[in-house]
Image (cartoon, rainbow, N blue to C red; front, top):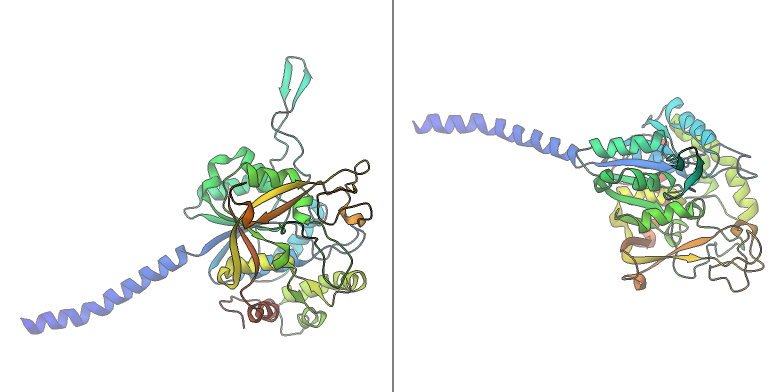
Amino acid sequence: MGEYRFLLVVLILPFLFNLYSCSNDSKGNDVKKRVIASTDIAAGLTNGTRSGAADTDDSYAVELISSYVDTIMLGAVVVRGNDIQPAEVFAANQTFIETPGFWNGPIFGGGIIPISVPDDVIWTGGTDGDENLPETCINEGVIELASLLADSEEPITIMAIGPLTDIACLVQNFPEVLDNIKELVFLGGRAPDQVLKYPFSDVVFTDFNVAQDVRAANIVFEDSDIPITLITFSLSSSTLYTRAQIDSLMDLGCSERAMLLSRASQQRINELEEGLNLDGMDTFDINAAYYIAKPEMFICEDAGFEFVDCTIGTPDVYNGADNACAGHGPDQSGGLNNESQQLWTDPSYIGMSRTVNSCISYVNQEELERFETGTIEVFCDGGVWTELP
């Protein structure tokens, strides 16, 4: 009888091991981060809302996070920001649907204009008296965001690398789905009194994603409990792709999408070299994608935040002599005109606001440089990646 028991164990153990392994594989798939991008993709667009080429970093960010082994890219909602929204949707379709690559959509149209109509605004000229204005912010992308959040069995991470227009609309109109947002990773925020500029250039930047829709940022930060991680300017401005790196994506061994991104970046690089003395291309949004994949590579801290009002010096231009906003004043660069608020974040603000996660740098210079070189290889390869080369 003992021999039969031994034989039974020998025969059954491999089956149980395989069953356990399959169960673990299934659980492994379940723990993948589900990601939606809220983004102002504009790779290849010129002469739209700005005189020259639009930023291309959004497209690289979407490509990077969608190809990471432990994420599932559910879709991208394209919001007005780097250019007008219809042009951005066209660029997104050309990049992620028409050109072969790892991730091929879906793409949804998001906000076309900033959130500008408060909930309590009504029209008093109706035949029956007061009439509520329609919810003008609701669009295809917001509806899809709400649907994905409502239907997902796992919380979803939102990579917000454009203005927060659509996320604010979600907060206002679909509060029942907000608990299923695992984390909102937002490219924005600065240290108190920090002027946004490179040390080798006199050009001062706005905190673009905040400035493009200040009210939306107010709503998301102040009227919701969504967990927020800020990829601040100190972090996002610390990395750079050289022209040689971008040009290398045109090698015949690279994916078609890598080649498209390289071609679409050339005019942008030319303008950055001429206007900012920048030897290559800024990588702002791409850092947000890498954070979602590898948060352990960053130094982040609990912090509070404050929206600082910018003093109006002349009509519609925020250049008062005693302006509280960093970089503003009578001699400010034109890029700061109409920047009405700045988002400051710091641990000393804890208790003044709800707490957010503020990422300020890479863990060390080695990991920063690994990001700069390794991600280029990921783009060229066009396949799944786990660790950067």
